Image (tube, rainbow, N blue to C red; front, top):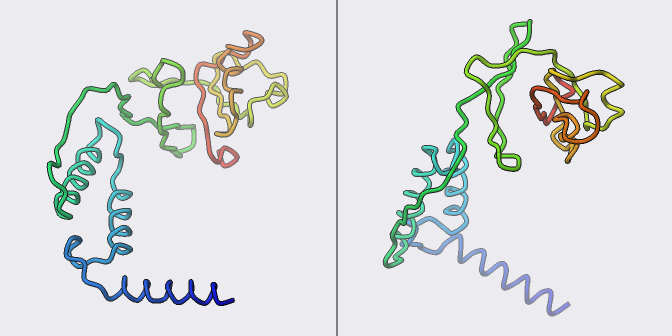
Length: 180
């Protein structure tokens, strides 16, 4: 019991110190509120992936924070990387509904692409992408929607596993496909 009381006392004293101490290196902000404001700021950026505007904004933020707390020799080093840039896509049906799509990072070596005019085809929902989810339907030249957690079953829809009748022209993954 004495050990627990001792630890509780240390915790209370430390907490009081953190809440009342002055932190000139963070502009007077406590480490907890400084961390929270950093997380809020960085998570508010659209994307921090190289090639996107948020990447440079985040890099400048981190560089300035390091300099503000007194780190010496803070510098940036630039290098070239290949990054797929998401130019935007949507799924549209006969109804006036338009669902925004987000590209995934490359599967194997090919980046996700669509022709400028888009694609048109019958939309089929195949859940986890197991053979039983297709209910014997031919999906050649269709657009297949799979649950995001369908693991490697997307290979079936791509015609890479099993029969060629399962060779869709596009595969979309949905976190909430049952709403489509």
